[in-house]
Amino acid sequence: MWKNIHCKRVLSKVRSYSRIAAPPPAYAQPVIRVSNNVAYLGSPKDGPKPRQLLSLPPFPGLPLPGKTSVASRVTAISWVKYYFDEIPDSVIQSHFNRGLVQMECMQHGGETFMRKIKPSDVMEVGARVLIPVSVAETRISKRFDTIPSGTLYPNADEIEYLQRLVKYKDSAIIVLNKPPKLPIKGNLPVHNSMDALAAAALTYDYDEGPKLVQRLDRESSGLILMGRTKESVDHLQWMFSDQKKSNSYCKDWNDACQATCQRYWALIIGSPKEKEGLIRAPLSKVLLNDGKTERIVLAQNSGFEASQEALTEYRVLGPTINGCSWVELCPLTSRKHQLRVHCAEALGTPIVGDYKYGWFMHRRWKQMPRVDIEPFSGKPYKLRRPEGIDVQKGSVLSKVPLLHLHCRELVLPNIAKFLDVLNQKSKNIHPALSAKPDLLRFVASMPTHMKISWNLMSSYLV
Image (tube, rainbow, N blue to C red; front, top):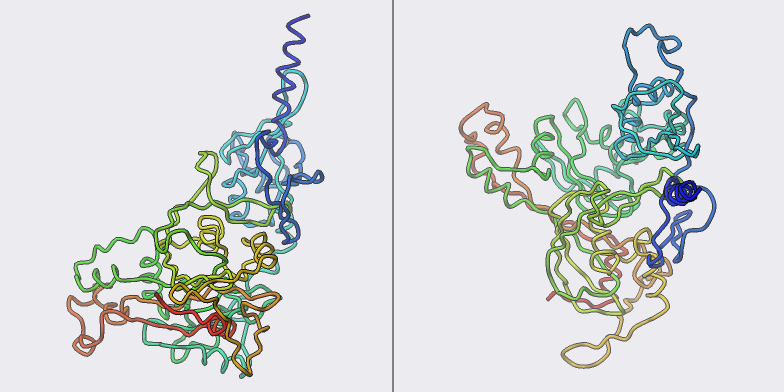
């Protein structure tokens, strides 16, 4: 009798952790919940599970209906691919990689619980696999994939507009100054994305349009790099990769690669404790309540989550005025939303206009206006209001400021000069190109709303 009571107590403790998401510990601090792109402070609301799961039918065993395979076993990923035959294999594989595919298992007391499964796990007759509803929704959204470049031809206004953005072009690369709100990648509702328009409007005398090498968020602005040939794209992607190692026998090329850098200017709420430094904070991805929207967060180094190393150098450019500071950011790695997360979560100073990662700080900033003192004269700063400028157009004084993040400077090797040497078509640089510089440096002016904020704050470089 005592053993049965003891077993029930043990099973009850186990069952409390057999749900889709483990309960938070008792000492956990209030967390920020995100729902419909709005953040709330507090514990999660009761309601739908964080990841709504879809149950597949019990595994029927071999042979599978409609299949003539003579295989002696079926793996978990093969069973999911068989059931979702219209879904791309890469989508299903990504769900396994993120640990989202689970199996219903039975405990000794007859209670069921969920456990994560690997793609190589062997299916048994009657086993039931559960997978997020997001994989089923892919079947619906499949026809909304990125528009093939060959099916799109922009009109004359779009071609002229995009060509005005070009700052530099040669035989290997094209550099553009992207305005805010222009998307980089486009789906069916977004026909004017930069990759689709560039493929059709920036071919010039080439058979194919340029390919994107780096990306900016839709709300960000600044320098975008494109490769015009397959060889230049390959070298540029290698150059911006984290595994970059200069192992060419050409010393000039190696030196130029070491000098490659990107510099961003951003306006942040508050000011870092240190005026300059290196942010070393790995990033990981989490799913929001809808089960399919990803969000980037600082990794907790718990060993239970996948994370990527992320490094950012920063330098404060001026004093804190009206509760904001200008900073220069140099990413040493290329991670999604790296600069925005590092500013908001690592430094505690989110970028102005970044409501995704800095919503809570924006609310506090709006509620607590500050009067900052000029360090030399001891007098309060006065915001300049140039005549004839509408400060409400996304500037720092707007009710809803636009994102103040701009890729201002780009330094990279002159690919066109070194291309023949790198492709081993020649051991020496062509005489006509030898006089060309080894390095190319580009500087892009800030968009209008950031220029207004700069003038309003009377900021100066330190």
